[in-house]
Length: 193
Image (cartoon, rainbow, N blue to C red; front, side, top):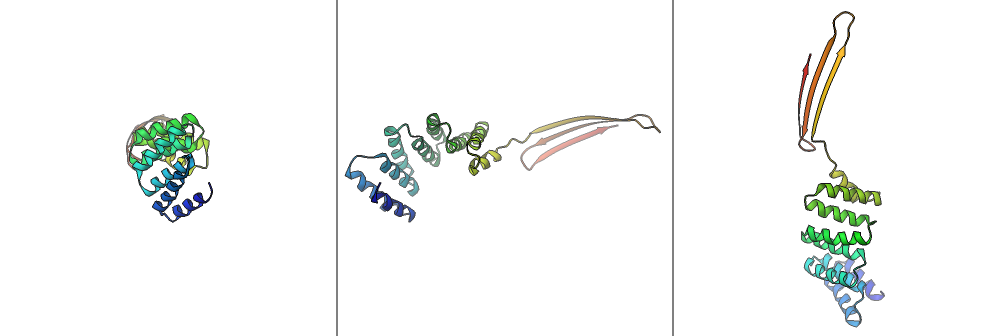
């Protein structure tokens, strides 16, 4: 990973994607297609916004290096950016099968589940990511945004008071509240004496 690596990094810092890809392509012409070169090529396609080319490259990479969870997570990220949460979920699930202790993979899986309207599964994945990496700010924010708010609350109460100067006083109360969102709620309460 000698000189070509430094050149690619410099071009990438300057966001000169075509030049960076040209360096990688020249290296690929020199000999066997080593996974690191292919991974750089896929990353550069992704950063340049060529999602279709990035997806093709990562698909090829996972066929030649299927035991590397990083490659599956990268493929899932490309699918996510393409708007394909089901494919992203399948790819990141493979990554988690290979290494279930990857907090970043649980975050990607949570995002895919959330896009597929599975907030319970997403919350579970974000919570697992926080358990694995308590400093993961993205996982914490995502988990906290999905905290369940009790939808309905019914309170029934009864209170009895004895006074030395009067008879017993009894009060009963019923209260029902409905929370429609984090900011909107309806409440009804009735007291009986």
